[in-house]
Image 1 (cartoon, rainbow, N blue to C red):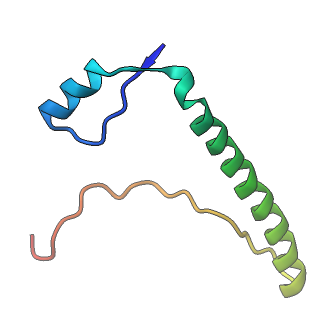
Image 2 (image 1 turned 30 degrees about the vertical axis):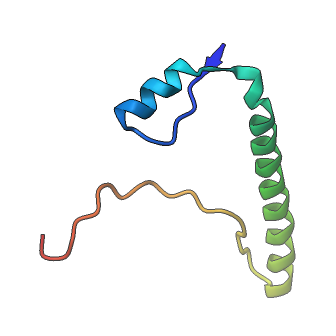
Image 3 (image 1 turned 180 degrees about the horizontal axis):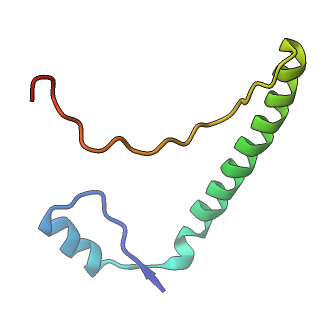
Length: 78
C-alpha cells in the first residue's frame, strides 16, 4: 500500500505528492504513537475521574471531551 502525504491542496502540491507516494509502512510509527496517546488519555481520564470524584464527594468526569462540530462559522450580523 502506498500513502499520499500532502500539506497543501494546491494542484502542484497534489501532483508532487502523487509523484512521490511512499510505502504505508513508513507511517507505522505514527499509528503506534496515536494508539499510545489514546491509551494514555484513557488511563489519565480514569484515574483523574476517580481521584477528583473521591476528593469532591461527587462524580466528576475528567478527560477529553468530544463534541460535534457546530458547522460553518457565521460572522455576527451575517
